[in-house]
Length: 176
Image (cartoon, rainbow, N blue to C red; front, side):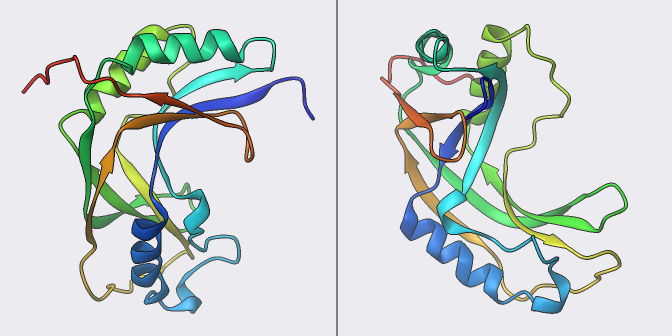
């Protein structure tokens, strides 16, 4: 196991919602998807922020910082409403589900403030990655993706099998 792992704060997507998403993605022609680009329901998530690298010696500290940044947000509902594509630097495009909630941007910036030492290379655009598409795929995908799910925790992931949960306690008021 490496000494340090890339750590992210994210929202997990419940299995029943991920299965619904998979039905949508399965309707995309297989010829349009790259060999490594298929949707995997068990890995479905919305990235809130990259938290840098950590190891076992620092995970407790990392979790305390995440709890400080987002623990006071109340539970809420997240919605995937429609799809779009992100460019993939000349290697096709990425089909994503657009995720909406009044708290996502606030949570992202609270985490960015708490982890200000971590370089932020990406503009925050809440989404679920659905598929990596081959170059020059112009297929219009049938149907519309619209699903909701309740969110009551933020997951901190330090690798594929290392996930920790931070419960949202509900005392923070949303900013409209």
